[in-house]
Image: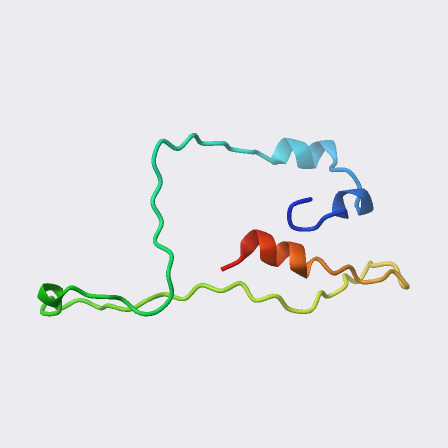
Length: 92
């Protein structure tokens, strides 16, 4: 939580035993990984242009919008701004 909302852990209640028992963390050691990151449409090889297949890109974005208080939120509490930390962590 601290990576996307610095200081939030100190603002919320600790997790209950039930929540902790229902939460699992998984760590996987990767010997190899691959990712393609760039912007713009596909760059097809000339010989691939005759293949009858859809080509394009799927744009994935996580837009940040206004934070919306829950119905049980205490009146008068300033709305925190986690947007900078969120953008730093999850920049797309």
